[in-house]
Image 1 (tube, rainbow, N blue to C red):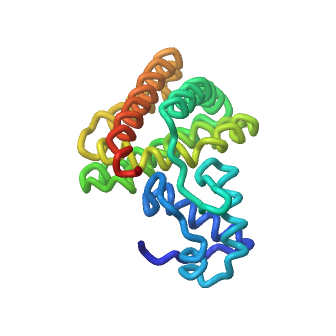
Image 2: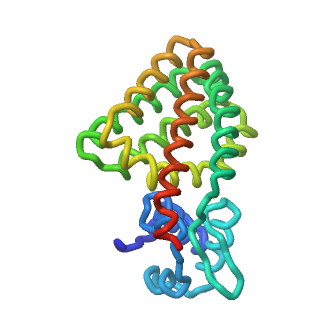
Length: 226
């Protein structure tokens, strides 16, 4: 695993949490992987106390499962979890898009366009981490510009898990094909034109297909996690 650097002026446990969160999202820790508090503390050059606090924060975000007297592990969703997660996203993202269009259309378009611009070289380089980050930025833009903090807070409950599943399970496929990239470009086009019935239909298809990919990939990974 690459060096874990701390470079933001926040509390120590918050800095550890943010770095671990990104490591999970980027796949440095695989789904279901054991996260040793001692290893993390040694890598960061800190005591185990801020690491333990960071683990608690990550557990609250659904990214880590802490088993007392056993250890801490990256989450592994069930088929039911994936279905519920996709249903949640399908309910929220089209509404966030409509609100973003009314509240800050130009800002949303700029952020989504930047995300798509970052996707193209990632596809060319088959860089699933870069693609996953750009993909996450595209979807998060809908909430960042929607002007409704309750929608923002609701999405934050699942955004880490969505990003981790995306990088670990769908981005390796997405960077080998242009289907996901083309869907994001179409979603942006529909957003710009304010065609939200078509936007909602395509977003539903997009998220549903991601869920199918998640479930299929997890079935293939299950023997490796046992």
